[in-house]
Image (cartoon, rainbow, N blue to C red; front, side, top):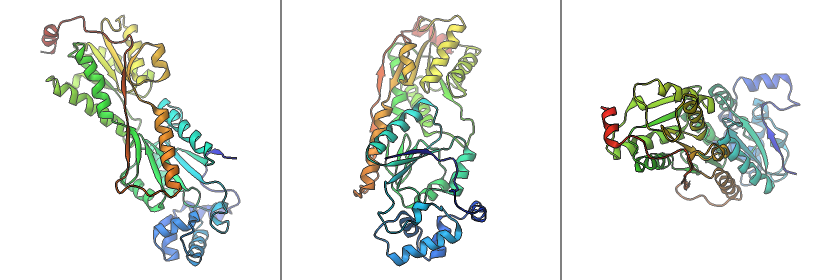
Length: 374
């Protein structure tokens, strides 16, 4: 039977307290490799039970790992390769309760489980938790592959992942040297802006999500902001920082940001939410202020979450379920030993504009808007 476990404790039961203390002092895969006199990649393969490693070499690595109390797991020391039972994949995700992450994670996990793979789910919801996870790096000897779901990584984290020598597939962001599945965020944002431009809007605002920690930012935010600016520039409008405001994540954050935008001197005739939750919050704030949507202000989101249908939100849709499944399929091929291409695959899924009732041409003419902008 396949299994999904939320891994919140790095140390395994059955390890004495002295070993736990030694592990917490920071032994890593490089330490194990140095102690065994092998490369980091060979140490990783030995801990995973890869048959290509010579028995004597594997024994030295296992002895070194035990001495250092590194990644101690009953399945890491269970004898000959192939005796460990089902393969196991780690899924590392920043937020398991937010729509995008929850949807993609569920799709990937369901596909992995349907193919006999166990899953360890690591929820790394803050920069500090992420850093602690990579300092301890509990994956060696425990898992056969990794799915990284839009995880904000720094160079040090990427190097530590690379040292494991494990197959990895990323969803929603690209990690150099590994395949990924996602959308083109720049093109997606331009699609939203161009829809409003085609309706006659010239004063178009943007609500972006503000990370709780500057060390924990997402590549999608950078891409969507860039697409917004590029579309305006190509239309000859240029970028106006007065039309961009940040809000905390979620519907409430969108309402807060929209309220701030309403306090500024000139009201935009249309607003784009970086993701649907922000756009839905903007809808609420506009109606609370007595403004009609789309009569006074049009609103567009990005993602097409389920709630977007019920609030009649025009949005740019992406198929997150398909992305999660495709990432899982790609990782399974890598686990089966399929040769990876010379250049890592970056599989881009299309997005599409979904027209609903939150957008319409502006009431004021283009010439009147130009007067407002001046």
